[in-house]
Length: 262
Image (cartoon, rainbow, N blue to C red):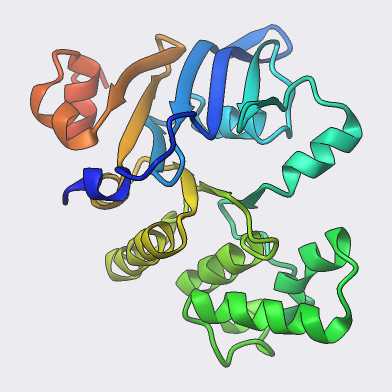
């Protein structure tokens, strides 16, 4: 897949800039001195082995946690240092799909997708329902608006969660382990959906995953975190890194080589 075809029109200024970010819980440092840019319209993947800090980086970038050090810029604006009012404005620029999907089980799909509209807009009920139905249609769930999450397969739940993340027409979608728990066929269908939304709607994706087939299918660029190094050990096109990286940790990951010390 020629990823350059999807990024040739990207603007020069990155839509996300992470600068010198260190993330810690108490005295335990998870990652330190992390720097990366995400270009507008690309599918950007944060990957690495278990416990390397992938989800921690995501939580700090979207503002759930505050970094010990460093800054996150969204389209040139300092999200880390923003006031509460400024943060609320910037939060509307992105949507998030958490690993479990995090749908409310007591609500229909329509009600789940409508929630961000109820919280952040003053649209009339009919307009919110129209937008929610449109988002469900975009992810292949037309006709499922009145179904409950428990009635859906895992893949359909992930699609519904993406529809909810898209409710406010965000520039950026953050997806945390979107393929977790899915069979290969369902996972491939989700990959196709992500590519379709990226190509046809120009949405920028930041995806946390360690699923190699998905990484190779959708990623324009990646950063790879390492648990021992506690920082980024590789950045670039995953296909190039798989073939040409001189870092043994990177080669081991991309070639699915067992850890001989394990």
